[in-house]
Amino acid sequence: MNEHDSERIAGMLEKVGYKKAEMVNNFKDVESDIVIINTCAVRENAATRLYGNLGQLLAKKRSNKKMIIGVGGCLAQLDKDKIIKKAPWVDIVFGTNNLQSLPALIKRVNHNTKNAVEISQQLKVFPSTLPTIRQNTISAWVPISVGCNQKCTFCIVPQLRGQEIDRQPEDILNEIKALVNEGFKEIILLGQNVNSYGLQPSNYQSDKKYNFSKLLNQVAEIKGLQRLRFMSPHPAGFTDDVIQVMAKYPNIMPAIHLPLQSGSNKVLKDMKRSYRINHFKRVVNKLRLAIPDIEITTDIIVGFPTETQADFEQTLKAIKDINFLSAYTFIYSIRPNTPAGKLPQLNPDIIQKRFNELTNLQSQIMLENHKKYQNKIVKVLVENIKGRKDKITHRLTGRDKHGILVHFTSNNELKSGQEIDILINKVAPSHLLGHHIKNRQSSALKSFNILEKTKQQFN
Image (cartoon, rainbow, N blue to C red; front, side, top):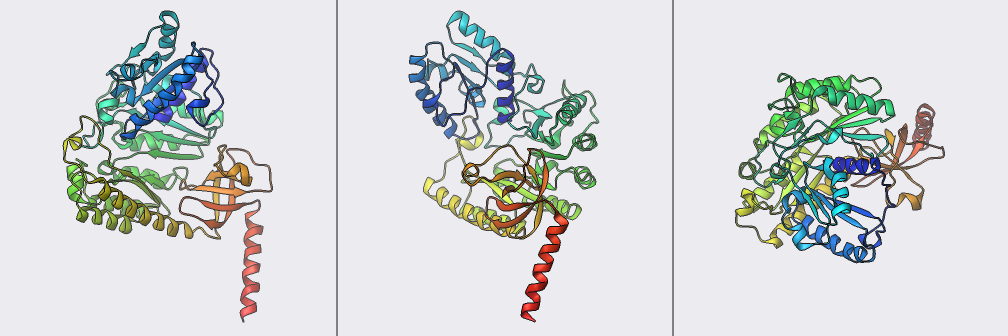
C-alpha cells in the first residue's frame, strides 16, 4: 500500500509542476528542492531509519534554504507529535488519510514559512482517485480497499489506516480498463485484507451483496488483461467461491500469498489470528486440488512474546509440511499501543537463533522448489526494472506466472511487457537464470535430439 501511495504522491507533485529527480543512493546526495519521505510503521526500525535520514537532510537544508522536507505515511500518522519536535527542520507532516492535501501544504509552507501538519483520522479522498506516476510500466497496483478490521495483537495498521473502506466496484473496474488500454499487462488487486471486500458497510460500497469473488470474476473478464493477481487475502476468509473463480480464468495467475504468521495454534490464538493450522492447511489443499500448478508464498513472524521453543518447532514443521515456494520472514517488532507490545518480550539472542534456523530451512525449501524448473521452458513477462547485477552481466529481468524472479539473456531486441519463453539453465533460492528461446518448438526438438544421441552413446 505504501508503494501505491508513493506513486500518488509523485503524480500530485508532477501535476503541480515539479519534476522527478534522479535516483540517489543515500540522502547525502540529494539535490532536490522537495524531498518527501513516505514512511512505514509496521516494524520498529522504521523510526530509526527515518530520523537517521532526516539527520542527513539537515546539512542539505542548511545549504539550500528553499528545500522543503515532508514526511508522510504510517509513521507520520503514528509520530505526528514527535517528528517536528525531534526534527524541527521538517516542513510538512501528513498522514495516511491526507495524501490529497500535499500540494496545498507545500503552498502553505512557501507562503507562511512555517511547519504544516495535517493528520486526519478519517479518509476523505480515496487515494486511487489522485494523479499517479507508476513505478512500473507493465504492472499496476489497484487498491480495492483501505484499512483493516482485523484485531491482530502484533499489528499497528488498523490504528494508522483505520477501519476497512471499500471502493465502489465500478471505480475499480473503470481504473483497470483504463490501465489495460494504456498497455499495462498485469494488474495486482491490493488491500490489507482483499477477501473481506464487500462484507463491511461502506460509503464506497453501495451493493452489500457484492463480494470479492464477484469482483475478481468481473476483473478477470476485462478484455486484454493478460495477468491478474491479488494480495493479501486472510486465511480465515478464503472461501471456495474465490478458489472456483481462480481456477476458471487462465489470466488469474496460479500464485497466492497467504500469510501464516505461525505454525503454532497457541501463538495464532495469542496473535488473535482467526484461524488455526488445520484450517490453513485445508485452504492450501483446496487451492492445490483446484489449481494443480499453484505456488503459495507466506509471511512468518519469529519471536512473538508467547512463542516457546515448542511453538517455534511447530512453525518449522508447518513450513516443511506446506512447502511454501517462498516466505517473508520477520523478527517480531514491538509496536506502540498494541496488546502484544505490553507482554514480556523474549531474549533477543533466542529470537535471532530461531530466525536464522527458520531462514536457513526456508532457503533450502526454496532451492528445492526451484530445481523443478531446471532445464524447463517457462513463460516470462519482461520487466523494465533491472536487478543490481543485470547492468554488469547484460541480463534482462522478468517474472513467470508464479511471480518467480527470472534473470535471462537474449540475442533479440525485447521490450517491456513481452511474454517470452525462457529455458532455465540455473536455479538459486531467490531466482531462476536462463536464456531466451525464440522458437519453442525448434528448441524442444533440439533438446530431444540431444537426448536421443546421449541415449545411443550408452546403448
